[in-house]
Length: 151
Image (cartoon, rainbow, N blue to C red; front, side):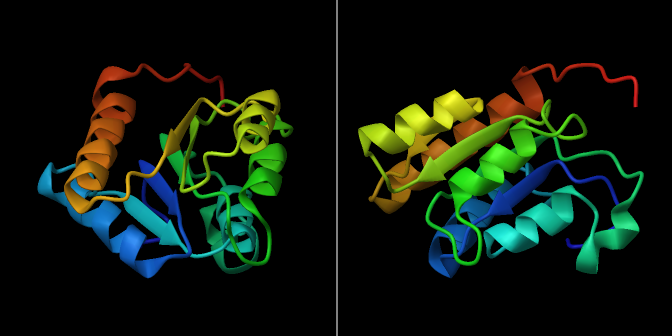
């Protein structure tokens, strides 16, 4: 699942192993997790997206089709990850979906000001969470048409 040189459709940025496992299980159940990479903090997410550090071998690889991004992350928080992604010409077209427990108005407002494509509050109940993640995966991988890039 985590071959660093293959095409990545979903980058899951989530520090909570339970939430990450539930998300991956829901996506796998619907055959949407074949090319998923899970990173556990904001610094690792930035390394992956910008092909540096442990992920330097990704240079020249296609970007993920979508990033599912938690806001409350160790090392570099989700808003800083979002700011970096949306302010760089190499990554700004990557759809980023904030998937977080925060329902704070300021987090929602700042996320949209920074260019987030969607903001979803994680449902607390297991079945609702699994349904939400499945619907997100289906929309971003099967329904949405990403921009055609000249890269």
